[in-house]
Length: 356
Image (cartoon, rainbow, N blue to C red):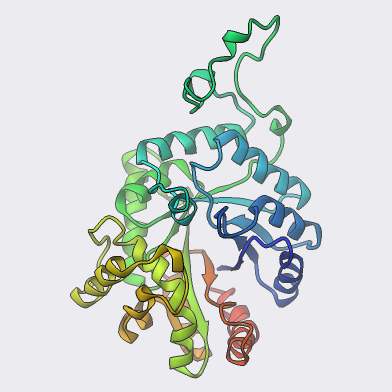
């Protein structure tokens, strides 16, 4: 199992974080893409790539609205060049990045188009001008310029013959899981840490792959997992609480829960959704974080001593998930308890679960 850690796209802090992640044995480092809340992810990842030799580098996650497919492809491909083939493009329909522009997540139809064009650009293949998602009222067609010579289509020619950067899609609901299964290289589930929910996601993706006439065994699976390893359960729950609300909300964002859930778990999700304050996104002191019960946290996240965390990850690996991107392991790391949690994860858990 590949085990990744996550950090903000901070130009001031990313170098130290990347060097530390590589030294401590993590398989990769992901950075967020939310322009109003953090720095530019491609700048941060390029800086990380310049000071490391081994770890993978990914966006977790970008979205299809704030960048055109061509711009997204060029950005992550540039990171791939700097890092000598270690980049991964993680993308979802959008959350905080769009909320801070006054928008909801991208419509599924447009997300599908974005993924098709992104994959084409990354492979150095052409995209028809008529399919490029720019409205005439924003920029009129190139034909209005009466150029003597002009490109025949849209493509990133410097990517021809280069390694194609793999694309991961963050997914919670069955429609996005099915779309990701046929248009991405890996489905990254945002379903929590319950193996039953992850197994449901894997089967949903495999069925979509079969329905499309594609081999389900060639698709990779991963999961975003909120995890804090500590012997003090209350402290661990408090550290994971803020980030966990974001992932819990994904499974009830539009008012209906997705995936297998108990009535109590579903009720907590609805309370998180009703209380969600985007101005306090990922904050442990938010109203949405207060809505989480200990029982919900213990199921949806992984919290507890090293041996407990190891067993939980072993159960996740048994579902077919081969990559976990962890959020929560660095949250609160400025405190003594946070440093203890980080040390327990890196010294007693990380190398064990990488063998799964």
